[in-house]
Amino acid sequence: RLRYIHLIRDGRYMAFSANQQQYKNWGHLYELDSGLAVPLQRLHFWVKVNMQIKELADEMPDKIRIIQYEELLSRPEEVMDSLFKWLKWEVDHTALLESVNLEDSKSHTKAIDIPEVLCADIQRLGYSCN
Image 1 (cartoon, rainbow, N blue to C red):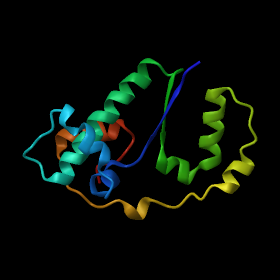
Image 2 (image 1 turned 90 degrees about the horizontal axis):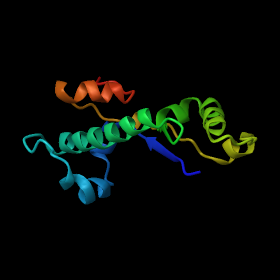
Image 3 (image 1 turned 90 degrees about the vertical axis):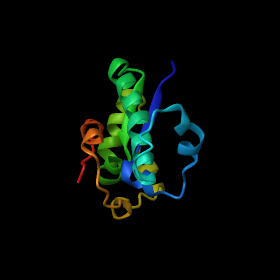
């Protein structure tokens, strides 16, 4: 049975990341506000893509699971337990967690003035607009 696990990271990180391949490949498919500064256009792209995935996940919670990268960092055992239960896998994830380097990403997010029109969706995706 096919399932999709979507790992999401704070959109502010993506907006300023050097890796813009997804935005370059797919940004033209979305109606983005061209009046926004480039980082805000990237954030707008992030919002649109992730809201589509959230809507699908809400419709098909048994097939699509969204995991926040920051939650994985702050509560790895709880997130992995929940994921493995969703997958119906009986796995001792202790060794897995010990072998993975979970670096703290919070210091990488940058302050950005987020337009109100994007803020509601950002909050629906589980992130703050501050």
